Length: 234
Image 1 (tube, rainbow, N blue to C red):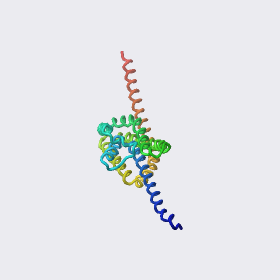
Image 2 (image 1 turned 135 degrees about the vertical axis):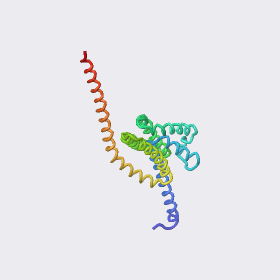
Image 3 (image 1 turned 60 degrees about the vertical axis):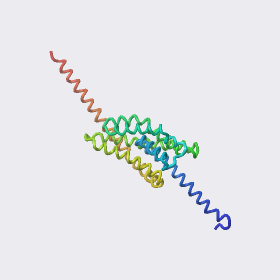
Image 4 (image 1 turned 45 degrees about the horizontal axis):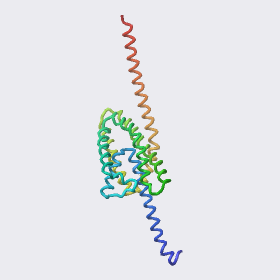
């Protein structure tokens, strides 16, 4: 048991150590939260983080302060409006998701790296790798799920899922910023769910692809038969 001056300094060291641990958890939650949300709706992610920082509700790391720039916010708001409507139209949403495979994943990696940039280059690279992978997983789940949902002829399910995704992004980022421990636990559970869900979604997407291929082959065969029959007439 410590006594004397060392004993007096020990609680201070514990307090400093606890504060550093909490700061590290907050940084990790911010980086992983931004990457996770980017895979679902990148523009809602940038708008949420940028506006919260601009209004003083949170203080983003220096590398992410650019999200509060009026030009960045204006561009994100414009693209969010475009995505809001594109995301509600079956077929259009699938094309939009396909194109955003080249946008959401690298953006998620950049946001995760920016959150930990002050820690050091090694942490920045590690965060980019993990963040990019997480954004890819959530993007693949969203895109695959939408493709399966769009096999239903009614549009209401698609609309409900699209709105739920936007609400989930805002709620998830709020949790990451205000309750990082809770968010990280939920994120770990989500990753386990994705490991189980993604193979099933992939099998569903493959079945849809085979069905479309059979449909087109059938139409081609029918068209070919008509031509042959017509060619046999005098």
